[in-house]
Structures are given as C-alpha cells and as structure tokens.
Image 1 (cartoon, rainbow, N blue to C red):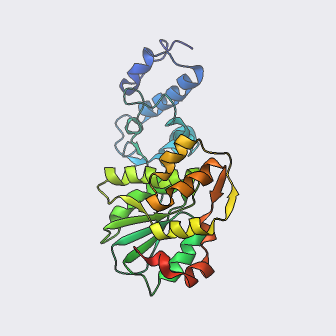
Image 2: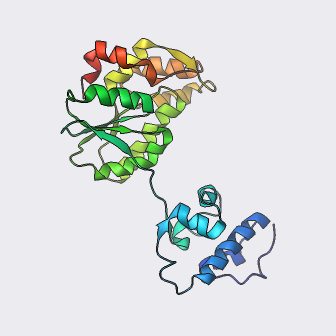
Image 3: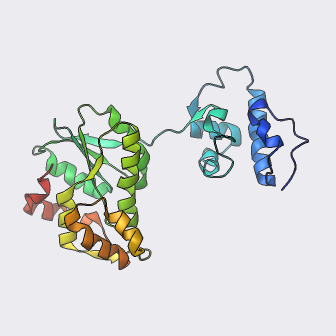
Length: 256
C-alpha cells in the first residue's frame, strides 16, 4: 500500500486521497486524473461515448476498462463509468426475420442458429425472429430485443452444460430489469437433446446442489436427466439436434 497525499486529485477522485490503494491502483487513478484535468471544460471530449472508445483514449488500450470494471476500484463510492463519461455498450444481437409471430427464438451456437433459421423459413409457426445468442454475449445483448417489433415471448435453446444453463438465467435477470418477457426454455428442443443423449466431456463435474440450480430453469420433464449429465462431468451440445433430426421430427416446433 502507498499513501496518495502528494497527488493533487481532481474533485471526482477526491476519495483517492483517503483510501488505502495499491501502487497499481494509484497509477490507474493518476492516468484518469490527467484525463479529467485535460478535458476540464471541453464539452466535446466529455460527451458520453462507448466504454472501449474511452478506454483507448485514456489508457491506449481499448479493453483496459473492461478489466478494471471487475476490480475493487469500481464501486458506487469510487470509480464509475460515468466518472469518465463512458457507457457500456451491449454486444449486437444478430437475428433473422422468419415470420410475423411474437416469439424470438434465441440459439446459443452459430451452426444451430443457421439450421433452425433455415428450417423455420416458410414454416415459422409463431416465431417472428431467430436470434444468435453467441454464448455469454446474450447476457448483455438481450437488451437489443427491445428494438424488435412485436416481441411478446422469448424462447432460448442452448447446450446442456454449466455455461449453457447459466447464460439464459442471467439473461432472464437482464430481461426482467428492462421490462422484457421472461426468457423461457424452448422445451421441445431440449427434450430432443436429452433424448439424443450424445454426451461429451465437460471441463469438470458440477456439484449436485449447483446442478439443481442450473436445471431449475429447464422444463420439469427433463431436469432429472439434465442434472445427471452435469454431475457426471458430461455435457450435451445442441448440435446433436442437427438438420436431419429436426427435419424428420417436427415435435420441436410445438410451443413455437
């Protein structure tokens, strides 16, 4: 730890003079302090811009703020993005318009997104959009669903593994905060995935109690089998429900 009494802090960083900070933290704050000094009174430079633009301007590294926002420097009584006139931009949400229905069907992985988009074109049921979740990106990109006209229902289909079940549950929290419909499982796609039971190796087994929380979002009819997969250190990739299977078995369309 180092004292910061010798630094003349800008008003926005006045708290730094009384906090116990590491040498690395002090150097970060000095860099921000200089930017605040140099932009004082410059309304153009102090216009709110995307976080990575500001990060590049201040640190010469567009991803530096991504890392810093996960540290103890960023709390409401310390740093915020607003201090630097920056805002976090949700990643884009790629989608295909397949019909006029109110359902947006979100698919975790790119190949399955292509398969289901193609199969729904011309025979879409109540699905209006098929969206590419892009893994964990959907936790933030779900915000873009607000811009899609006529959406009344959000269905999700992903892998049955620790990440694949965490993503929609976190996205559901984001959706609720934005006043969007709940993110629900595309029940019959998950049923087919469980039925195929093509097990791959997961990075590690999931603790049984954690597994119960993960599968609680799934339809009750597949929770037991899904939990068994996680606890056994296995995973079910959604690509197991491929083009040939989905052409032969139309049951996945029920509920969509």
